[in-house]
Image (tube, rainbow, N blue to C red; front, side, top):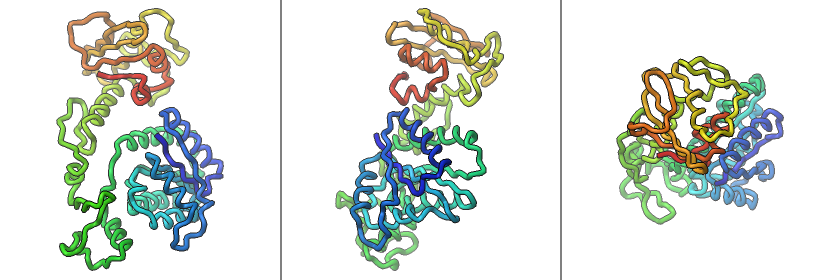
Length: 365
């Protein structure tokens, strides 16, 4: 999987540090990054150029776009504006993927510039992703964590393969591109005698009147959630399951807090110097990471299966406490299949359960 990083005056040190964080997170998730400097684009004259042809080709082969721009005065940099102007000469299918807009301002306008970029992206055929708006007054240490989380969210968005939902602006944009009159648009719909917008398969595009129509067009069906989280109709059954698993894992360990000693029942969470001993029974270490204060009513049985050694064990959460058992008559709610190496990385907080799952180091039943 590859993403395209579009740069417009990205030489500012603050932006360079931000880009380094984003690319580092994506690299950990096995995402390849191709950086393109938009300054090489010639001034827009209403004609296609070889430079823009290559950029569009790269975007069409990627799974997403990260657009980074300096905000000189209340708007995106001129190189980024040239990119969007030139993009109007190409088919929307090349841009039908998410965008993360990263803007940086030393004065004003970083939010407005990001919103304008996402709106332009939606009009030319892409679907909006997220925005990260930076200002020189923000200490970089405070936004580094935000950049990491936004990058992880953007990765999950790319995996969903959504489609452009369409909008009034995009409909008008398509009619203008085809040289048709705006009089053909009446109260948000097309006159019957007019030819509908054609897709690349030469089939009329299904008119989307509501979000439910979009879900039916994508082949999604209504599912009933298993438990623990509210059902999100914009997710597929597989994505909803991952969301529920993530919800359960977050209730076990608070990954947002520093790794410090916290009193939880009869256990004490280990300090940052904690390491897993090379003893055979590695699973016995897990109850020490349990924090009962997060949810004292939580009751469940988790099964762990270490692939290399074949060690199996159960983690039983009950009555505000957590214990390890080699056997139990209760059926586990979740079974984790993980290598010893990945378990060590999880317990020492080098990676989270979610990241281990994304990288294929952890399997869940």
